[in-house]
Length: 111
Length: 112
Image 1 (cartoon, each protein chain N blue to C red):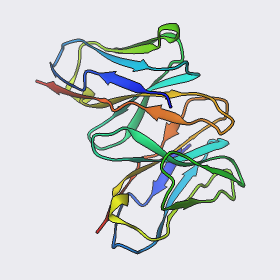
Image 2 (image 1 turned 180 degrees about the vertical axis):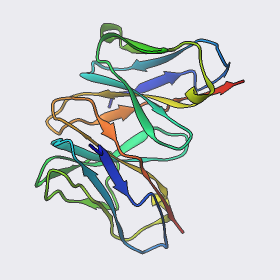
Image 3 (image 1 turned 60 degrees about the vertical axis):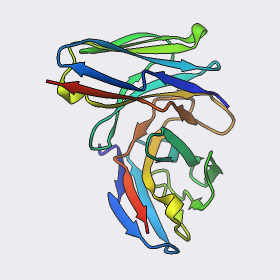
């Protein structure tokens, strides 16, 4: 099956710093999503981005489908950005919309 | 619009007990699925459904049953709980065709 690798696995930032999280995948995909899992365990949708670039406030994402990677940019980080960031990819099959998740990047933003 | 809802939020079972985790969505999504999340890992697919009356197995289906009698509801049944099923369970839904998926708040299950 498809492999999804995220880097770095862990990241500690000072408040106000910028960061880039990376997601590499091993095959062509039909869909890619970024999620933030907050310290309470909720999965928050950040981006639905099979290709191209999107921005939402301090966060932006770029997916280069032909080179099989996606990047999540966090600018001016805040303590509320702490948590785990997951990348998940989807390959359409006859069986529906199976998402394959990476193992995540654990982010801690300190004052 | 409540989105995807799950009950209960927390549950403790003894080995061998059975229970049903509830999932409902009010977005008229055809696709619904169940994932489990174990410490240090991403989410893994247990079962999924592409519409009422249609279900299929995912990556880790053993020990779990599902059915889908309505578009809105997709319950997950543990017939005889085992400690290996201690995990956080998430339900998700979307339109078909690779659309954006939305997750419920999760159920934290402990099997003693």
